[in-house]
Length: 302
Image: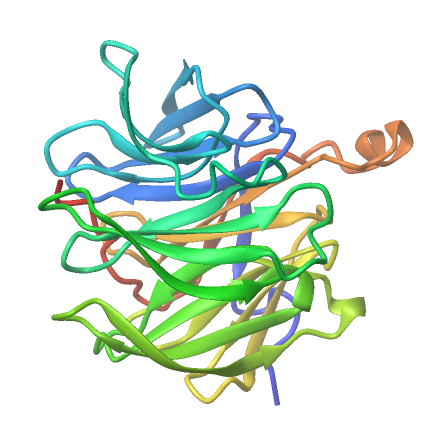
């Protein structure tokens, strides 16, 4: 039976960022800093370094409508944006355009993105005019030559990405299909095959959004409108449900010195004024003390 409630998991309010749509949290283990973006605003991003009793916060104007990202090994970030793929240096504010394989489709734009464990960047797309349409695709950006490869299509809003501890399975959220997919994954070649449904989310449980994978192979899915983050075991069975005091968890990543703290971004988008007053922590950064060790967040090697 799945564990429910917070009898084993402490949900803690971390920082009042008040993001319209907080997304794409990335933990930099070397710097002990979490980064995340507000994809509902015009390119706002955050960094937060936890310290005893609080933390050190910085806000950034990215200058692009960022929707997903990864930290670069060489410094800065690789971005998925509504205008294509870019590099961004927060120290200087400089951007460098890479590619936009969806440029010929005016209503299709990039959504979430993550780096795999050899430093490639994966990013998916969605039809912004109607995200229920299966117009989304999945792309891979290679670090050596910055080539972009089309990897899959027929996605109703490509969203959260993650990889199993043994690198043999890749997970991808088909958000508006209410499904999480699993693929056979070849780490050396960066190829995927045999897409299948890993989990189907009942509508009353919330819309599946960002995800992450822990060291035991558990898949943690933030579920918009469900007031919850759900952990699935490697077979796709619900292992536990972490209840939240806000309705819209959006994504999650493991952080902290021992990688047992699950940081969760949230959103106030689509809440009424009354709803925002009733759930004032909507749009803030939260943390769950899981007792389960996560995996280091990969960086883009280019």
